[in-house]
Image (tube, rainbow over all chains, first blue to last red; front, side, top):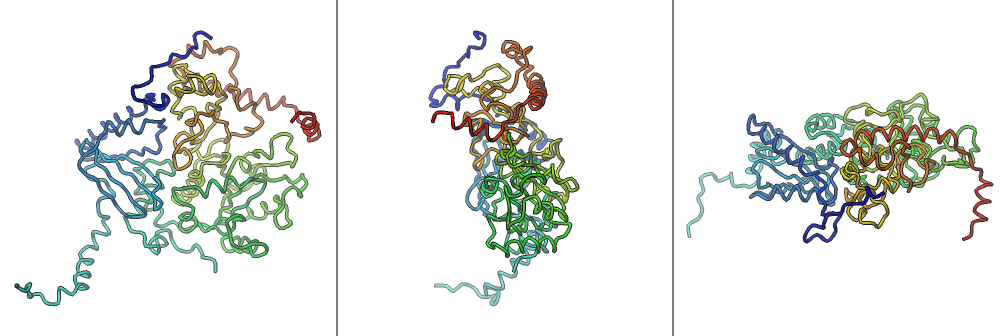
Length: 154
Length: 372
């Protein structure tokens, strides 16, 4: 049994739970996948989406991954079927997209490697209707009735 | 009046005021739910737009309602989404408002109106045709008669939970009720097994979503389980696997190895011989799962897991592969793991053949002689 004596690593500084601070090694392959996806985006404009829900992460793996990716300048929120939170990482073109339900539970958590995350773009069908929507709203507002009116001077 | 499933899912969702971005999000969540790559989202969107909500009849037999409890805690999509948008749940003892004759009438009406197209979901095992039907009845009819009558014109049957899929706890020796699984009784219809005690809620909804998106049943393994969720062993997807490969094992529940989160193989983890999606889909809204909580996998999605030896005894290791050999295997852990799984399965087959049945009398005698 002596050969099976566990070799215990010293706990990481500042860590309260040794199990949680252990490096499981699952963040690194995802970071390499992001690197390949970025290369494809730069070379041919191809965007990639990685579903973090399907990864066999252990405690702390996701935190390690997001810590390496860091935070960028853009944060966005889409309200459709509950909130979707979009956060740019410190690497331009790499986005964290957090789909949440109406009860604010996570439905899916994805990394998108793209110029703009898909959910932020208007749907083509919506875009096609946008002129009509503007005209309808303009007519509804009543502003269109007096086209030559200028604001009263005080 | 009961809502007829005559609208497409797209129409139904628009009636609910769902925006196009909301629909895209639903499709992204559905892809994630079905363990499909995000690149499939456009195909899923096109299919869901045209899908028609199938009528579903849910039959509960010898069960603990744990499977329904599991489903009602599904968060992606919520049960509400599932009932309102994905399926037309026309009969379910626990969830339907109607009772007595009205409930049974709802079942007959759904069967008549959707002949050849409805899905039957079964949870719980069934006392077989030769067993005393009095062990489990609904409205005075035996489980067996109700099952056979309901599946006659069904498109497919989904056996939810290990009891329905493999007999489960009721079938554990000595099997006093003569419990049988759905696939042992239903031979002329496609049967999809979604085992687990209970199954992961998202796997239940994932199978239904697959049927909606692709209009056919998912690809199954030798035990009738969808490969998308049961295609890989717990061991192969376990975040503790690198410790196994390095030969680092917890030897007890409170030693340093356990605290460091090392492999639970020697504490009885059935991960190498168990096929399920716990390691990635996790439980309680993706919070954790048994191995992450420090407990070995019990193997609840495998046939006869109750009779497969102690929960806290390691899966069988052949004599030629002692602990030292195991440790020496090191980086070749994957090969050894696969080999062990095969050997363990073989041994379980042999054990099953040699196992002595225990009678109820013997059990009662044992209980009466055991000090409290």
